[in-house]
Length: 452
Image 1: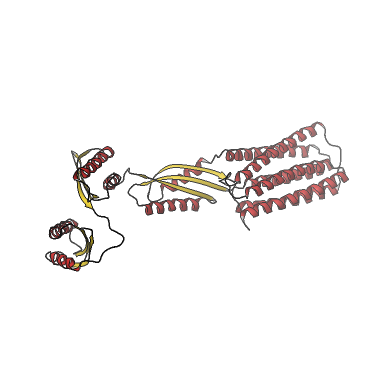
Image 2: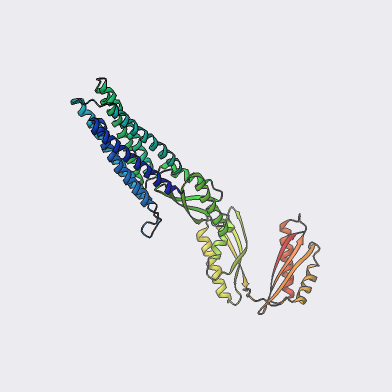
């Protein structure tokens, strides 16, 4: 059974029990001339009306979201709880007023033992209602309709006990006993109803406890990869809590990494808060991100740049010294390429402070077509012969040569000793790339070093 069906089924049973108590109390009250039972039966009529409102609200709240209610219809349930709280307040006020009236005009009617048994029956129905509503409320946390009806059940039990006490005390001649009990009960009901009205009124205005917002913020901040929490928006609709969270992630993070971090944020919130519906938005931030990643992002965003690599940055008392390699269209003129270089430098200087010097190395970019030509084995043999001149290269792996128009694209895998410094490996690969380019006209060479 779904939680919504459990909610409506519980309220339906509660309504049936209230109606049965009303029939018994009114019938016996009229038969035995018991004012206490007749008053309590009228109270049962009011309660059955409120429970019916709560039941309708719960049924309407089940309706799925639509174009006009994108968060669903849970607020209808909250409105039902708000109305129920107001009715409880009026009933409680009636109890207090009736008690004051009885102080001034004590009742003279002495009901018999049948009235007591009728009140005991009503007490039993109240106990059943409290049990089933309490169990349902544990499963459907945050249901304002179930909570409102549970308050009604306690109120009914209290009023029935007042009726029983009143009948018994009147029987022994102490009429003020039941009046004092009614005043205490009425005061408690006023407190309960005001709490319910206040809670549902806040919920109708989308108020959420500050403690819950702080709790969610703590969960988000403690999720690995989150740089900062931009905003948290939360609201309750029925028993569901909606959270709309915006987080800041490192601008250097890939889309896959950003998606994984966002999923972890959503999972952590749901694990901590039951019935939570979470939406996570992520935005990049370059604060505290690596300088090289910032430079790559800035340069890549300049129009005409096809790729960025070999970014180096160092710092001294005079500021940052930056160098980077930028790929541009191989058919572009020097003037056009130089303009792109100037744009890159201006953009970097505008976004990164304390820069002393920037060097932009321009390189021709060749796009790789979807259909590739056959590898040139003659060139591969020449490349292998050149690499063998370097004893530091322990093994030549895959050599791929592709002729793209009038340009050769050459990718080489080479193995080096694993403990060789990376700086030395870089020097060797750079030298090999330069030598191959000097031997093969229009060659673009990339060497991928691997540990042997």
